[in-house]
Amino acid sequence: MFYPSWLVHTRGISNHEAIAAVKKTGRNPYEAAFAAPFYVKNPWKVVTELNVLLDKCRDKHQL
Image (tube, rainbow, N blue to C red):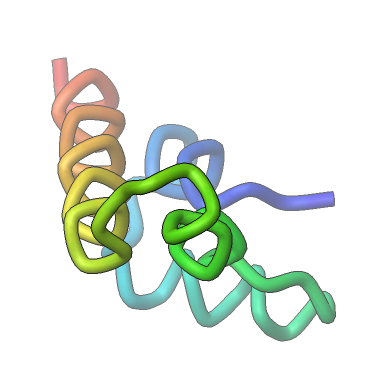
């Protein structure tokens, strides 16, 4: 199973490519955003946090 953070870190691919690869496996990388309202969180903020996390993973890969 692939996770976007693993793909970004080990392969150095873009956030968009990593999310598309996860979608091809039948998983939804945005599950946390859909559940956010149940935890009184803003779904758009959760998606932004996902992208920030992926960017940080890529930065670690480039070191």
